[in-house]
Image 1 (cartoon, rainbow, N blue to C red):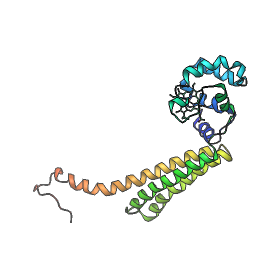
Image 2: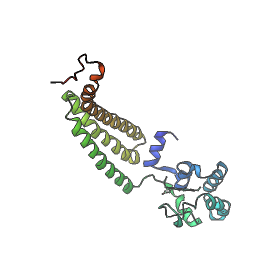
Image 3: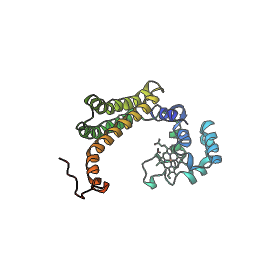
Image 4: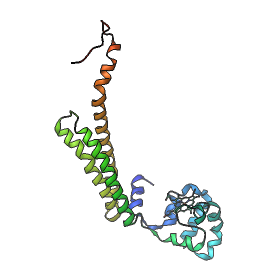
Amino acid sequence: MSLIQAIDATYHGQPKVSELEAALKGPMAAMLSKMQRTRVLTWIHNGGRSKDYNQVAPIFQEQCISCHSPKSGIPIPSLTSYKKIHKLLGTDVGLTTAQLARVSHVHLFGISIIFLLTGAIFALSDVPVGARVLLVSIPYLSIIMDIGSWWGTKYLDPTFAYVVIAGGILMGAALAAQIFVSLWQMWAPSLQRAFEPLRGNQEGVPHHPS
Ligand code: HEC
């Protein structure tokens, strides 16, 4: 799966693919052998019927229920019976609106606070004011691009997955620039002073900047 397809699948889901199949081709792919996977996928494609369930039941028993059962204590769907597995044969709709709203909220607030802190420090640097305004603003614009496009990918068009990536890159680059420039301007002068005596001050007297 390409990155774009993966982003689309996360937010929009895969209309023709059940949740179980999506997991077996995605995060759960490594949980079973190629042959077992083919058998389970064939079972799913034949309608995931209860009369054929005994052909795949041992695979779920051996490979899945160590985690996917109430006993494991992990908050994931139980796969201990046909009825429970059957529930995962509906179509994969990606993140639900409620889940998406929750992650959007957490990211918007959490990450914006980081921007506020790095931005406040960076605003005191002596970079030309135009560049400062631009670099302080970009992270906010790019997080709106990024998170807005999660919703765009889910409800409008898979093309928004590209904007998710562009927003993420822009956000990372602007944040890195803010941090690097701030640290550089804070530390470079004192580092220079610290190493000055080593560079052979003839009289052996440390140089005191006025
Ligand atoms: C080592 C523990 C472990 C094993 C073994 C395991 N899973 Fe999972 N599974 C998880 C965890 C943790 C998640 C939730 C995290 C995630 O979605 O990546 C998950 C998620 C899933 C989901 C998505 C559930 C949802 O919330 O929509 C499905 C479907 C699934 N697994 C199926 C399987 C199947 C089928 C097998 C056996 C072939 C299997 N898993 C084996 C740990 C496991």
